[in-house]
Image (cartoon, rainbow, N blue to C red):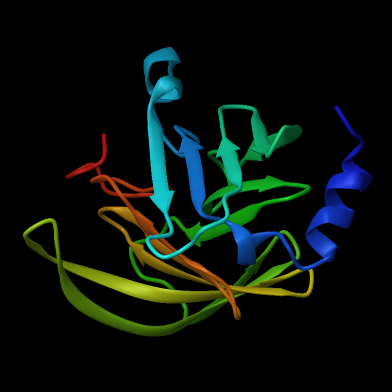
Amino acid sequence: MQSCQGGMQFFQRGVHVQKIVVLILAGAFSAASNAARAQEIVRYVNLFGEKSMILGVGDKIVRLLDLEYPLQKCSPEERFVCLKSDVFAFAVPSAKKWAPQWTYGGARYMVLRQGAMTFNGELLEYQVIRQDWRENTIDYAYSKERGVIAIRAKGGDQLTLSGDCGFAATSTRYCP
């Protein structure tokens, strides 16, 4: 395994999210995180991309290509549902109502807009959240009920949830 610094250089060359085609996140946000849940995989795909890169998030690691990095989740005392590592970060407030902007772990977040759309045959309310972190801008389409349903880097590929439940869902209606 290469050093964390090597992984950061990979990201700093601008390749990170722009070239992601498949994003795999495994059970990182489950409140009832157990061995069965850790095996569950959430998959995001780029429907138009030709190149691929895999980012996997497990119970205690984040995997980028063939490199692994330590991963931490927010503690129950914190007011966020989040993941944080040297190569990946995401956080949303755990409160029912959010401020339009927040910061967490060196990242700034801002709700750009709210809307509703049909997702898997049901009307779904969502927010587009912009994250500025380490000189990168990433937009997330996020639903409290379904979690992250799409990811787009500034000038990069768009990744779309290919299943029913994305990561960071705070409701258990659809996502156990």
